[in-house]
Every structure is written in C-alpha cells, then in structure tokens.
Length: 82
Image 1 (cartoon, helix red, strand yellow):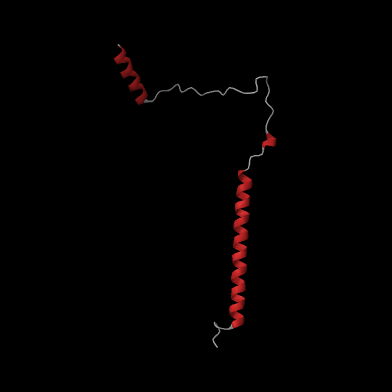
Image 2: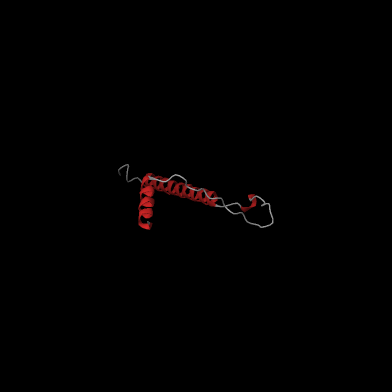
C-alpha cells in the first residue's frame, strides 16, 4: 500500500482539514462581529442640548468667491437683463 493511500494518514489529513475549516469559519465570524460592533451607534454618549427650543439651526458656509465659469454666467445673465 502506498503512503498516500494509508488509512491512518488519510484520516489524520481529513481531521486536519476539518479543523482548519472550523478555524477559518470562527475567524470569519469574529471579523463580522467586530464589523457589526463597529457599526453600532451608542446613543448614551449624546450631549445634552442647551436652550428651550430643543433644536439647533445649522450654520451654512456662504461661498463668496465665484469661479470663472460662474462669473461668465453671471455676466451673461446681466447682459440679458439689460
């Protein structure tokens, strides 16, 4: 009987492969669990809002510098109005 076909060797190899698959599955589950925990939002750390209204009006950034194309469009619009 050849070494490859030895029953004991095949049995050990099979058990080894099963063990490796089990470890890979556990590793994948741990990764997914870590990802899920990372995605969770903890609501307990919210800051208390000050003020009676209960909401805050956001501040907008106003764009003051016009790009070259925006300037050209504005100039064209001004010409049409005249």
